[in-house]
Image 1 (tube, rainbow, N blue to C red):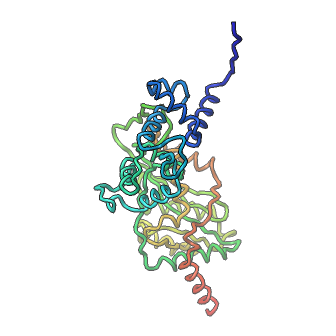
Image 2 (tube, one colour; image 1 turned 90 degrees about the horizontal axis):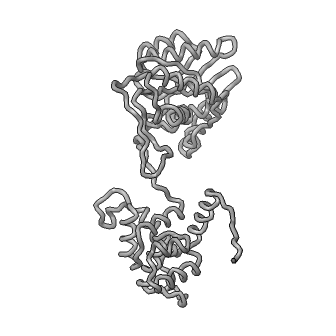
Image 3 (cartoon, rainbow, N blue to C red; image 1 turned 90 degrees about the vertical axis):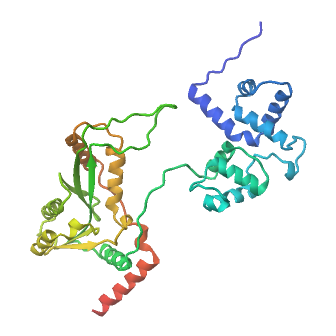
Length: 363
């Protein structure tokens, strides 16, 4: 009786080996030749895939390549394997991705793998499947992701505002503080988002019978990277004034002569009650961000992290528990070692900063 050789491979190790084989299968002519010979013996694609430990799509690709003129004994470029991403195909694919689908005659706003495959066939005369295009896109570093909305940044005073904030950040004295403030909405209705889940299933996040909201006002310290926050049931200037009172306590007058607070142009920051509060507290000065420019506020990144870690797909049934989760997250995950966004280093901001320095030197 012949001896039996058994190799113990864990499920994870087998998955890694299969992934590596699939990653290299287009570079391995031996696999394609085996598939071709088994097809000549009238084996089914499922049988061939089981024997050779490959996908059935690989079998279909070899069959399609044979029908399109590929021959394993020919190595000329015009009859080479049609599914390899040659440099010329790569350039054509990237050129298509840089255009809108409507330019190529498609009545749609986004490219799909199928439309890219058909457009490549019309351009180059090479027929490929949508799955092949998908693998090419992954190989090029492209991913299918959700787009984000951005507001139009058209503030005519944006460069001077950037320069003012950058000047204060670069010349901040020991008895001065620079903080970036913003507000965050928290809802009992959870924000839906991506998460890992088994194939062919979808995680269900229950919605509340009645939605409730709470609001958090926070200020990020540019020097210490800590966040000071207050919460309230309404998003009004009273919540912002409550935050300013908290900052007055955290930055006492015997240690800080000047406190700069950077805010956006939301109406509650310009309320008359806030102006009266500032008049009574001369140590505080508000600095204004350009309109519709959330990238200039590092607090947006902190609150974005909070949404991703706390409020997205949450299953809290009471709003107070969600608010407590947000408070614990800010307390336990600081300090937030962020830096000013790169827009503060753009040429127009740098030019405005030079003009500001010259004005101060003259003065």
